[in-house]
Amino acid sequence: MPTLTDGVLYATGILVLDFLAWRFMGSRNDPVRFSIRALMFALSTYVLFSSGMNPLRAAPWPTEPLRHLLAQVLELVWWLQGARLVIIVLDRVVLPEAWHKERLFQDVLGALVFLAAAVGAIAFVLQLPVRGLLATSGALAVVLGLAIQSTLNDVFSGLVLNATEPFQLGDWVTIGDANGKVIETNWRATSLLNDEGNLVVIPNSVAARTSIINANQPPRTHGISVVLSLNPEIRPALVIGALANAADSSADVLSKPKACVNVRRATNEAIEYEIVCYVDALDKKDEVRNNLFDLAHRHLLSRGVALHAMSVAAPVTAKLDGKRQVLQNVPIFQTLDDSEISELAGRLTVHEFDAGQTIYTSSDEKALRLHIVARGVAKVMVSKGDGEVELRRLAPGDAIGQMGILAGVATAVLARALTRITVFQLDKSALTPLLARRPEVAREMCRLLSERQANEAMLFALPAGIAQPDSSGLLQWIRDGVKRFHQLGI
Image: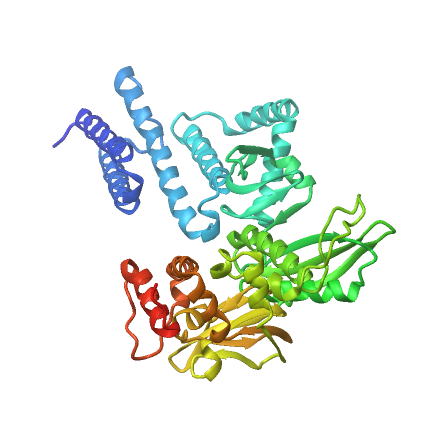
């Protein structure tokens, strides 16, 4: 039969094993670590009770000081071990899943369980009067409460924030004047990581008293606001139409809720317009906002509204011909001089399309013409399965059919008007004399087109029966097409 001393040694050994399991097993092995600690607690309970060291009573050796002290320590540790296991179980059973990453509620729950375990250990193991202890601790709590009033204010504010959940870990929020990603909430404060990569620590009491803007709520609907101030002499209806088309030109802007354009303020110096639209992902906001400024500029320019500083008088210059203006935006024409641009501009034809009408398709006889959007918005789609997939949208200055007019190969896509649209078309017969006269221009056009097609591989869709060239032979493939289509010797 084991002696009492054997029980102390066994319980001490079990305690050491429990400590090693807690210390050296990683957090990835939480279920295994919990199982081992639960087993150690069960063994410790068996050894203590079988050896006469009942944790619900005082240690059994008052006449042997060393054994009595060791037995008391083991019984006290048993209470703490039990408290830790209870905390883990309650954390998984009682606390919602969303709170498992929050330290505040876990700490509060753990503090309450450990406090109850400490009171039980003092009452049963040390045989001390609990009522007197509680009365003393109550008075001490009042003194400490007055001393740490500010800290307690942060703690209770943190409890309110965690209970109401205005934000969660990982959300992008604006709290007062600070904004950033929530990376931690604890007893004292909420920590944000801002755009500059700096850590911003906001006391919970401050966060509870100020306005909180959560950019992640509601999910998949994130607002964007773009504000432009324009000359009040420009008719507002013209500007509103242009800005509405700018919002329609971005495929990332959600159709529901629908984008809207408002006049925010009108003074003698300027009229302030605002585009309000939405995207489905937070990380798209900056890119789409920047793109909207560019699209607004292009759509305004297509309606003859040239932006300039309102603090000075508008420059008196000859109005740039619309046809020349759009030709200069086509990448393959960047190498042409003014006279050559004017020559091609004189051969452009103007075509109007209503919303929903087809502008370009590879099966059309006009597929080998260059189509340049002068005003309005179109969308480019490709057939996929039983439906169509949108590839991109065309705004003023965008073109489709560059491969067709240069190399005689129609792109297997479909372009359809999204709004009422004006399109300039350029036929092969207008380009052939220029290419024959200046072979170096033809070579440069081939290079520019090959670079563009390589960067926009999704738009380089060829009709059935035409082999897709690899990226290394793309330039030569285009040159061969130009020679054959325009009957040149470049």
